[in-house]
Image 1 (cartoon, one colour):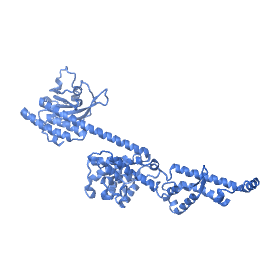
Image 2 (spheres, one colour):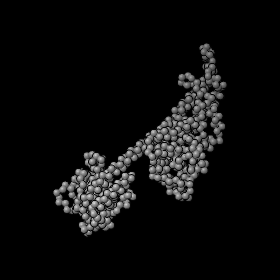
Image 3 (cartoon, helix red, strand yellow):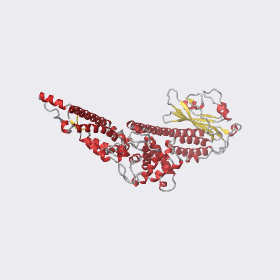
Image 4 (cartoon, helix red, strand yellow):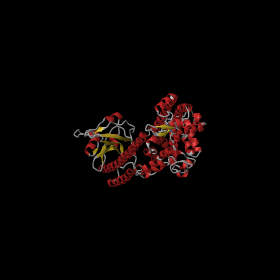
Length: 560
């Protein structure tokens, strides 16, 4: 852009043709360098049109690109308009058919250049015609016009540059009254150089369109990856996108800080994009975590809960049958002795329960235990007042249940409560055992291994490392590497704040309730106080209300 901005505005009419051509060549080379350096598609189109106007001292111009998305009916789509004498914020004209009836359509259809000294002097013998409605609507007078095709390396037209009114003086604003006197035709030298520029422009446009296509392809891949994650863990729907939004916004605010420790961190657009991708993909490794752990909402898996309920109900039925048999024991004893069949109470239950009273107490206790087991299966139950102060009693009751035996359908005796089930029911917080928690935490390693397989280009090379460190904590207590603050990338520290906030405030999940915004901010501050999260980032997150990007609002300004 700088090269084009410093181009001289026009060629004085009294210069020799040779000197003028040499000047144009120098300027064309400078513009070519600027085109090669430009990566933004919209900026590139603006640069192409502005450079074309500067080279020819054109009062105005427009640029069209060919749209071949419908092979049956390609179109010329308006992209940009510029003018020294008219406002640039004009309503975009409708697409033009790719045929020979309009000036731009003719050039796009044939690949020829039109150099017209006065568009109103057309004699009607040409297949194209000038549309005067533009002039009539804006009280303008189009005189000379140069319309050039932009062709790719195969010769196909990808766009059209349309220049209007080659002015005699660059600083002149044209009106309909003076247009005829203050404009002149485009010279052959200008036409030749503009064809060269159009060729360079076509290559630059192709490159940027290809780059955008690749970026869109990659964005599509990332979106598909996120859908895979969310299909396996529907409870966290939208989490990755929200973390990406929060992380990028917080990084932008860090970039704007001009004092304190955060002032040392500046993020380029490429680094923000790097953080965006890392945030979107930070949980991709969950595809490697078993689904029964990933979606575990209670301490026992559904199949374990069903098995325990089955054994509990079966034992109750067996003991009730034994109870009935003991009530009938006197009658059965006499009958069986007469028949020589032995003693009716010579069974497994006789050895386990000494008398009928013990049996009755056990049945009643089992009925109460059913409610206890249902409560203990809830993720946060041991932290509630009802259970927090009676943990020893709960442990004793589970030990007693584990000591009971039940006869299964195959005649084998089995423990009513397995040791692994006791361990799970006594999980103090959440629904995961230590082994299951380690399996969940392994998603970070899976993410890193997956991202390492992608050949990230230079500006995005840190994406795997940023995602890998988003669960690290400043005091070294995080995972998977136990890094300390100096070892954790700032982008990962930013993502950690965003990740924790969204995990707290996201919609209710089976294993936890959502936290109000003010409470979530307070928890972030507690984490910062304990050197888990970066205190300055947490304060900036609150002060700038980064959470508003998700539509979140504090209940009152007093709480800010």
